[in-house]
Image (cartoon, rainbow, N blue to C red; front, side, top):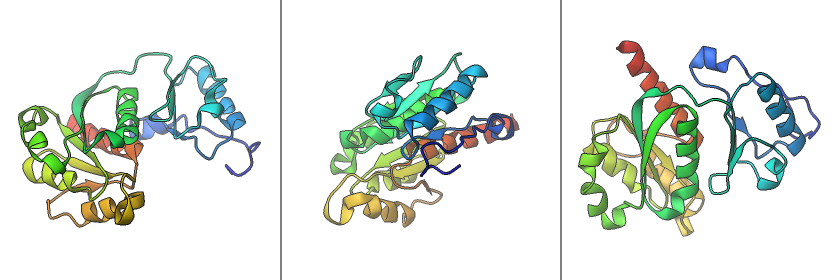
Length: 221
C-alpha cells in the first residue's frame, strides 16, 4: 500500500493475531482520513479491534464508536473487551513531558489486554524518586522506561531491577538532546547488562516487545 496516495488501496492484516498473538496496529500519521475510514469499516464488519497510532485529530473526527486520546494521538475501536493476558507491565517515565509516549504505550498495552501501571516523573535529576519506589516496581513482570534528555533512567532501572527492561528514548530536550538522539545513544551505550532499546518515541513498539516477552513466559508455564 502506498500512503502517498490518499486513495490507494488498504489491506489490513487480519491474520496477524493468529501468527504473532497480537493484532495489527495501524500507523495513522501518513495515512489519509479516507484510508483510515476504510480500514475501520473493514474491521467493524469483521468485529475486529483496531488501534490507530500517531493520528491527527482531524483524520478520526468522523469515525464513530471509538476513543481518541489527544495526548497519545491514538484512536481505538474495541467491540469486545480484550482477553486478559497474564503478566503486568510498569511504564516508568523520567518526567511529565514524556506523557505522549507513556500514554501511547499504556493505551497499547491495555488494548492488548495487559495490566499495566505508570510510574511517572521519577527521573534521575532527583534519583531518590525511583529508588524509593523499587519495592513497587518489583511487583511487575516487565519494565518499560521512557526518558528524554540523556535517557539515564533506563540504565538506573536496568541496574537495579532483574526484570526485562525496555528503554524508550524520547525527543524531549534541547541542544544535543533535541530529537532524542542523545537519549537513544545513551541507552544503546548503557553498561546495564541486557537493557533492550526501542527507537525514539516508540511507545507502541515497547508495548509489543513487552507482549512478546510475556508470551514466551506464558508458553513456558
